[in-house]
Image (tube, rainbow, N blue to C red; front, side, top):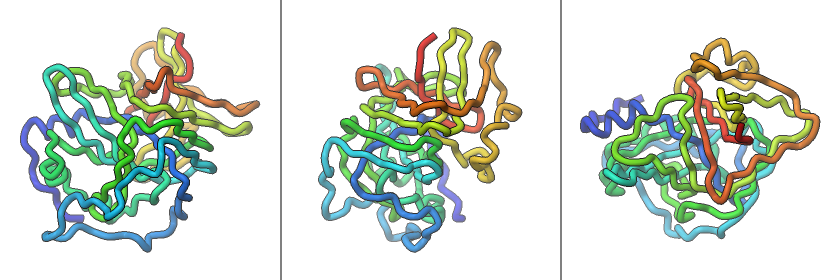
Length: 269
């Protein structure tokens, strides 16, 4: 893996504190086999960090992805820091490809940020879904497609990071603008965080960023590796019936744990 160039202090600070929430957008394209690495590419010295395909028009405002449990994806968040309103546009591979590892590792965040005119670009992932189906009623992002180090991604959501340089710590809520339904089938084992006020967050995906060896078989025991804040608990259960978790008025509330696994709010305490 080649070394990435040094980033300016503000960008480096963002990379250290941003553990941003995974988002999702729908597409009619079927996700490829996660074992297929035939599309792996790498950035060369003469290649742009970001390229735009000949056809970059969005396929439409909505879509559905079925049978997503265990499907791999990744994202790039392009962050614009502002004294009043800092935002991140989320570009993701969901429904397009399985995020080839060599290509993802070759993404140059500083070059991406420079080309797109943002403060910093933050690779997010790879990640794996632990839900079954996704319905994207409307993309909060533009739906535009671009390629990052040869990986095609789509603009799928906007994350509101408040004012100034964000301080993104585990177990802190992040608001993600997206109109989605995340479904978990009956019989599925699910993993939940409960906050002191009784709010419950359900895991939507696990991350390989902190622990590249993490897999679905280890999730039930992940609590032993978490530094849960006082009053927080981690639990597992098997669903008796299908569970659908939705955003509220176009905004999903997401938290991450110490391993950057992502959980969406499913009920307020």
